[in-house]
Amino acid sequence: MGATLEELFEALGALGADGPLQPTSLRLPKALHDALLIATELGMDASVSAATREALAERIRDFARQAAFNAHFAAFPDDLPRLAEVAKRRVSGTDHPAASEPGLVDEVAAEIERREPDWALTALDDTVDDVLAYVELLAAGVGRRSA
Image 1: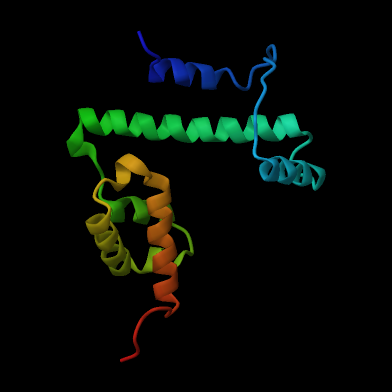
Image 2: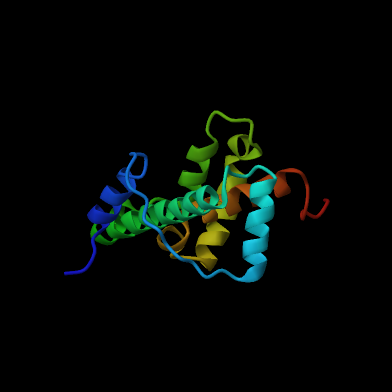
């Protein structure tokens, strides 16, 4: 039997607990290794090991979250939200330009949904970030023709 999402979330849940460390050997491109050493020296994390652990944990959390969304939406396709709704919820109560430009959010989200119909199954957070970035630029007048 293969690994399950439940097992992945259980393992992720144990990350904060003190426990034994498992020595692991990684092969990294030299440039990435050098960047990691420099970033650690500049204060990104206390050590190369801590930086590596945090980066891996973040990547695995992102993967698990997206996999859980995909599983849910596969079982309940009617739950798939509209991109504009998600973007509007994210900025609700903030001073982000999208909060006061719902029509612009609808326009940008519709265009992105047209180009990327599987947005929620591939990169939900990144796609919402794209909508908000485009709205911010358009609200500032970037990319719009003057009348």
